[in-house]
Image (tube, rainbow, N blue to C red; front, side):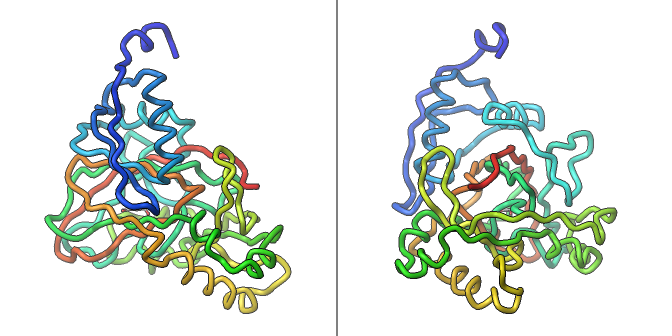
Length: 289
Ligand code: SIN
C-alpha cells in the first residue's frame, strides 16, 4: 500500500454479530467505501474465516470503491463465462428484471469451481432489491463434513472429482432465454474443467470441508457420471440440511462477502415480477488441496 493510502485509511471497530451457530455474521461500524486500516482489514478477514460469510448494511459503493475493497483481500478474477458491467470487466452484473423468469445461482454451489484455481470468495453488493424475496442462503461445508458418518469420510478421503462449466456452457441459448444475466455466447462448446479433492482442507483455518456442488461437480475419479451420481446426490442432500444454513435478507446497499472455500450458496428465485440488481466481484484463491 502506498504511503498516501495508508495515511488516508480509516481505523474502524467492526461490531460482529453472528446470525447462526452454523455461520454468517452481520458486521456493523465499517464504511467499506473508505480505505480501511490494516488492523480493521485483519479483523474483517478473521470474521470471514470464523463465520464463512459476512454481511454489511447500508453501504454506498460505486464500481471503483467496490473494486478497491475487494483488492484488499486479493486479486480480482474476471468471470470467464458471464458478461460484465460496461467499463468494468472485473464486475459481473447479477440482474433479474421484472419480466425475467430465471435468476442465476438457484442451485447450491460454490463459485467457478470448474477453474484450476477456484476463487477465495465473492463480494456481492445489492443495488436494487425486491420488497420481498430474493434472499441468499449459505451452507457451512466444514460442518457438513464433520457430520458425515466416519465410513463415508474414509471413503471420500484422498478422492478427487471433476468440476466442469458444461452445466452452463453446453446449453448457452437455453440458459440465456428468459434471463437478463447472460452467459457469453463465445463460450459455447469451450469447456473449462479441473480436478479437485472432494474433501478440501482450508488453506487458512486448516478445517476440512466438503468441496462438491450440484452444477459443477461432474464425476468422481474412477467412476462414470452415472456411477458417481448416487454418491454425489447423497452428499448434496446431506450438505444442504437446514441446520447448516444461514439465510440473508437483502436491503438496498447490503453487501455479502463469502468464503468460497468454506460455504456453498443458493440464490432464491422467489420474487417473480420484481427487479433485483447486484454487482459481484470475485477474488482469486489458491489451488484446493
Ligand atoms: C451468485 O450465485 O453469485 C448469485 C447470488 C445471489 O444473487 O444472491
